Length: 372
Image 1 (spheres, rainbow, N blue to C red):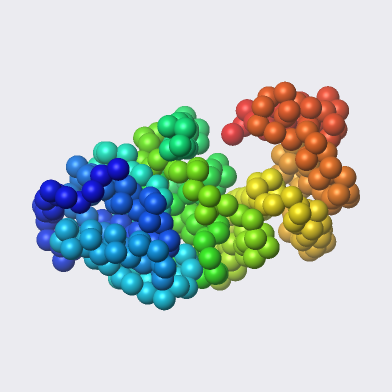
Image 2: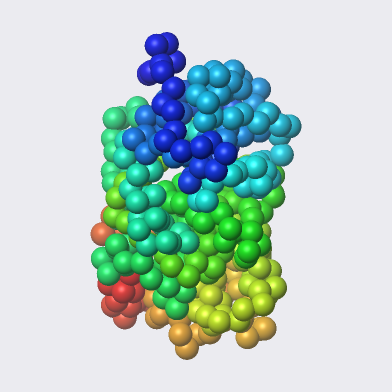
């Protein structure tokens, strides 16, 4: 692991008063990973950026590590604050940032060497509102790194208005593999939901940026090594079980209060499918003792949405329709099947589909997968 001994600050090529990019780094008790994270950021070959370190009341040595970097690099500033959670911390950073674009770096992740140049070259070349690359799943203990490719081939490298295309809204809601025009965030009232802790707050933020962006660029270029072996990031407490639900409530609230109703039907369908996907992902991720309670909550919530006419069944694909109908009719039975058969392997996916609805369900599952 690198140390600061012998470092020489990389000076920016333009004035620090108005950098092209601001990188916000939220920090809370990450002393094990922080130095390596910040080293990867300061080693970028792109120079025109500032760094705002946001120490959210850490009780370990994270603050002293952050102070070390702030002393060593003129472009790095440090804000120490009382603990208020991930969303409130990043909102403060947005207000303090001076860059034309904003980016985010989680303090337990690592940045690929040429990541900022790839993002900013695309942003400047296309005058984009949003540029997103991809990432790798990273296990430091096993020295394993698996690059992900979440975007359809016809999305990559094209600067377009994608608000009429539902696919971008259904990609993983990561924020740390992209850059965002700061003025767009202010114009469209895009902020993080200020719930406690650090669970899912990137969900509503990412959705809003897709819904606001008039020109988005997707790159199949890895930006972040997304750490998978930080034990402190798991969702094990009751307080985090329903955090994802609050994010989709915030999306609904934001859509309701928009003045521009263009693309509204697409946004509503994207929000519905996104909520469905996120709830099932959350179901698999939360502690087993909370799963029955959560699937029953999901069943009740979607039933109320159905009663209110908010589920457009005619435009929902057959595979999700089968799953959702089962959840509405028999949530505990659905959970039993899912816990017994659902998994990442092809064989488990086939077994789950057949148990859920026989050969017809398997056909609909394959069809849905091909449409991604």
